[in-house]
Length: 260
Ligand SMILES: O=C(O)CCC(=O)C(=O)O
Image (cartoon, helix red, strand yellow):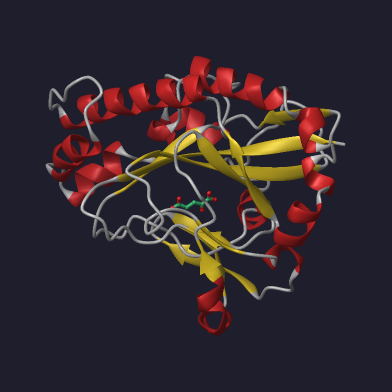
């Protein structure tokens, strides 16, 4: 079988969907339930549906949400991140490399969440509230690596690598209207990249006129949301849309480091 990185689909489109282990999805979902229970102090039930989680999170003020749902607090615990990294490590041949893994959390993230370790893997989740500005601008992920290089947000890697790939995983409340959107083939295009200053620091962006001209090309690539994820190129333009549903959208993310 042709490895993913050499496949016609990946070369042409820059993304594909692949299965994600159900057992890991289950553990991730359980952890998120626990975080929401603890952050809101509301005794939500075991396996609570997303509507119940939504009502609990809605009790937080906007400032309370930002404080309790900062990225360092949205990292999966050391052991669970390690289990995900083990699965990613088993994909090296499938992806087309000799070794695959996940970067560690950055020193700044470790400082902000001492329950993690310096060698905890950077596997995290995202919570987008309905009707709130909880999403960033369209970007390509390599922009983050360039912006953060040499700063306390620069994540160490367990081994020298040649390529980075990304995984986006739907976990709770995800559908085609509120989930990752990609711009097919954009990893091979010359994109007018920018960086912008926000209250959360320097963030990647793309020139507005280029985005407006390409708006019609964004689409959600997931044909199904259960135990499947999007695997995409580090240079693929993508975004998380604002959440116009009535419930939370909760998804997982990680970067794959690939040694050829
Ligand atoms: O889920 C989102 O809102 C954004 C996702 C994203 O930017 C990413 O996976 O790199």
